[in-house]
Length: 128
Ligand code: HEM
Image (cartoon, rainbow, N blue to C red; front, side, top):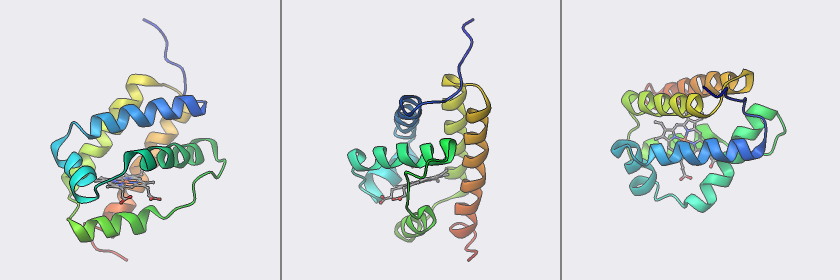
């Protein structure tokens, strides 16, 4: 079996993000949030997510945004649920494990869990 490499370049991040959002759009509940509720422009969203994950993994500060505010707004349009976060995380981890293995891949999964937990606190559980 071929050994997997770690996620180390922007090309790796682009592959990870593109394949993750393909999986997201196959899940009816998540797909609904992105395509019906937010009516997302994917051409704008995907590059933002490349920058977001590069910032997390490589610490090069490409992303400057406010994910907490964005998800609170989304929750205002239609409630996010614990089940959606479970699915989101399961798909993120599965996709990462399919593609990469190493310190950065592990850190990205850990950060995804902690950010998902924070977003969930501020939306589903209404903590401010
Ligand atoms: C239930 C799970 C989630 C759902 C349904 C969801 C959905 C969305 C949607 C629809 C947008 C686009 C909003 C817009 O531009 O109008 C968005 C943006 C974003 N999401 Fe999520 N999200 C979820 C979890 C997460 C998690 C766990 C993370 C981070 C680990 C994350 C990171 C981001 C970021 C960085 C943006 C861009 C924010 C900006 O515009 O600067 N999301 N999300």
